[in-house]
Length: 123
Image (cartoon, rainbow, N blue to C red; front, side):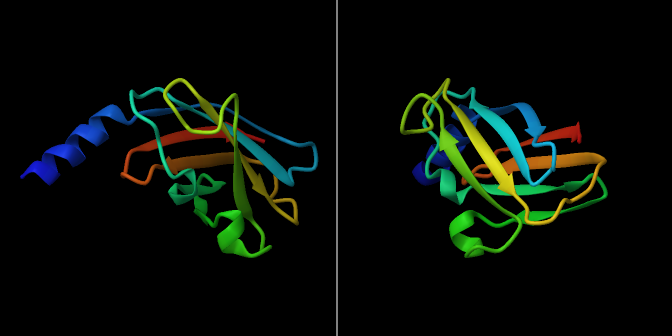
């Protein structure tokens, strides 16, 4: 019972907001800024799941370490700090070796505890 209460408490304190997405001119790099708007640290960032692709054809993108150099993959940079604390933004970079094409894209970020945020943008 205590474990369930702790899990519910953690989920209630965890919130993120995708604040912006952009791409390079060749569309080989996509940048996604995600802000921790909750009241607890999010860790580990590597355990997040990133889903990305055209709005009707998206897939889970493996992290850079998991992809072993394959494409696409994602990595992150914590801006202004070394932990994903409340009020801190993480810049996620999705890297392709081939242009994925223009269109409307869907992004879904899933935290290790299951909290999600979705976002659409055109590139």
